[in-house]
Amino acid sequence: MRKYLIGTFVMLAVFVVACKKDKNMEKATIVDTGDIAKSGCGYMLKMDSDGSLVRPRYIPSAYHHDGLKVKVKLNRDGEGEICNTFPVKKFYEIVELIDIKKDLE
Image 1 (tube, one colour):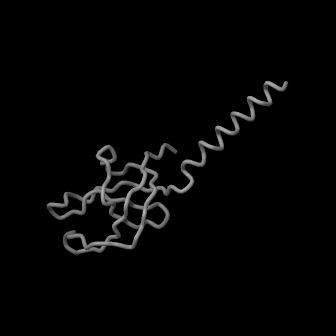
Image 2 (cartoon, one colour):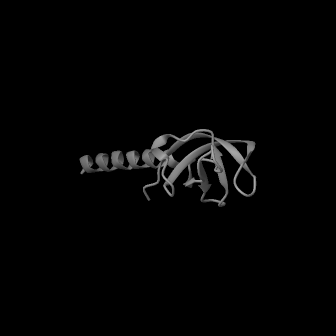
Image 3 (cartoon, helix red, strand yellow):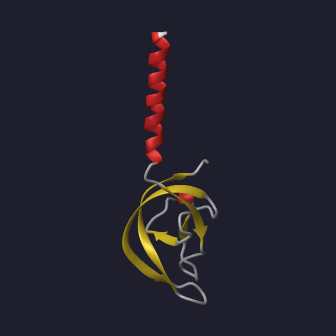
């Protein structure tokens, strides 16, 4: 009986530790707004929490898929830039991407 109790405790501890990895991550969707050299803004993130679009300084090429659901950890410092989208120029917040992974849920 004691062997099962210890095994259950170890499994529970592993489960709790594994769940905390995504604690500070936000859900988002990758959006391809078009080539930066033409009239787009490149790959951006549409945040699920408020629907806003933010532009990461860098997104790994493995995540360059329009509509891909991801979890991200961002550093927001309030910086932004104007993007030359046709016909209207828009201002987007620039964020530092600390961590990104596919959302498997």
